[in-house]
Amino acid sequence: MFARILIANRGEIALRIIRTCKRMGIETVVVYSQADKDAVYLRLADRAICIGPPAARDSYLNINNIIAAAEVADVEAIHPGYGFLSEKAQFAEICRSCKIAFIGPPTKAIADLGDKISAKRIAQKAGVPTVPGSEGALADEDAALACADRIGYPVLLKASAGGGGRGMRVSHNPISLRNNFLQARTEAEAAFNDGTLYMEKFIESMRHVEVQILGDEQGHVLHLGERDCTVQRRNQKLIEESPCPVIDKRTRYDIQMAAVRLMKAAGYTNAGTVEFIYDIRERKFYFMEVNTRLQVEHPVTEMVTGLDLVEEQLRVAYGEALRYRQKDIDARLKTGGHAIECRLNAEDPSRKFAPAPGLLKLYCPPAGSGIRIDSHVYSGYTVPPYYDSMLGKLIVHGSDRGDAVRRMRNALDELVLEGIPSTVPLYKEIFENVAFVSGRYDTNFASSELGL
Image 1 (tube, rainbow, N blue to C red):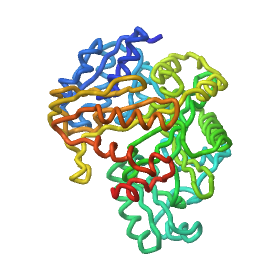
Image 2: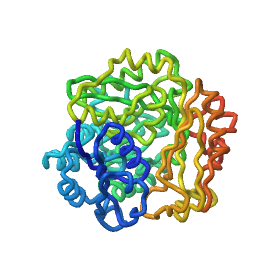
Image 3: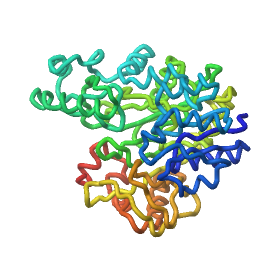
């Protein structure tokens, strides 16, 4: 196994990776910006190296500085966490060219699957259902209008290089499509330096279902069950759970096998996630995209399988074969119960959920059976204004969904966050909502039930 790795990330994911490495006897080196000089995980790592000023472009996105830190610390591998450089094929290639293992998928897989149009073509070749839409990139506004006439309104414009809801626009008629085309392209160019757009039929009542995948360099690919990420605000996930509460046994099997076929076709190794749209009315699923990294919501999969996904990532990156067969995972999932995760963000609901950095005066996390919290914050910690607003993740595990919902209510009541606004009150409202508790809702939940 690796003797020493570098973690090219910050916050709760840096701390989470350190914990697994400590258990496995692997030394860790963390990099940090000047804004994170008081982060608790700097004291838990074996070494910490400052790589630049607060702005992400000068630190966590500065490939030269990260590689220099890796070489100075004489590490064997780099774990990119999620966000920042985790899905940058260029970074993975540079790591490998410097004889440093990249704890993630092959460079080609990152490039092929990171482009939404390319990923859709791979899915189609693998026999995975895809949403009706454009055959490739839309050349211009006229091409978008012609495609919409062919597949019928409403339609969804999407950024080929996108994610997180940026560069996405729903259009219900030609007039709105004309307006949205320029807006979507401009947003995509600003966010991803790539204004390429494509189009899909917009499914009005749907669930967001994703399948966790693990692949090794020996050609084995396993699924670790599915997660439901339907509760979202403006295409940003709020709550994730496993298993999905609404799909039947046959659909569950089909969607899991579709994910495995796609990742095999892409030559995928390490951890990744295949995301799908589930049409509630038609009871059909369609491929949406692939995330070529560890997901924020990976703890719910860990809770229902008993696996440590970071450990599995490390083993695969070192060249080991997967230690499990699909039947082993299926048996774990059969008795795995139900897990739910809430993303805890420093955001102000009274200001349209604007980020709310500042001094966290008091932090008291919940505890008890079936409760896990992944967070890097502490009482007296100052949340910096330079990065995303996530304070951590609250995860619960129960015997079934009803049990998990009750545990989450209790955990939210016990959680204390004082000094800055947070999304905790929003989650308390959601877990009392009749539609959420019943499990019968779609991606419009935040707007239809909460008015967000």
